[in-house]
Image (cartoon, rainbow, N blue to C red; front, side, top):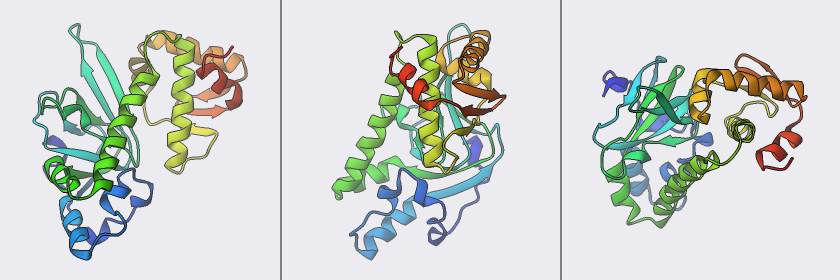
Length: 243
């Protein structure tokens, strides 16, 4: 695959670096395993990168071989509709996982591209699926990760107003960036305004008006990719649909 044809593989002993934030921590480092079982898990996981922004992790139609845990940076998953327009399905940050789109029908249904220099771990899905039959904790973790991705997609379901969707997006990014070590009220968004517009299903012009509206209301202070949440309580109420 494009992104890691010249992968920077590392020894398993170095993999603990940065794993404290990873949502696969329970999968890679579960408690209570014998040393031999832990060694089996370590040999499955291949650290890669960092790779340059613009690198492609996988493309639509590629066979499903692995899931990917982001160690640093941000990766965008997206598809192109019949009219040639980009539809962004998700932004995957440090400690998060992507690749579950291909569990069925065994081929990726979207593309994945690095938005900034990023590193990640490649985890062969068949190996984990087989091992999860032996360890219930691994099985449960995989289901939780798949469910979380599905829930995030439902969060931006049609029916919510554009203002509500952007409020949900900002509050969601606040939670996720905070887990990745960012400051709680100051967001440095790794994606462009155009990417956000394609994710929320609005035009870039509409997105600009929405940001301006939130700024005028004293809810945020935005400067390009830097967003200060001036009133997160009110913003959260809007995200929940409370006027």
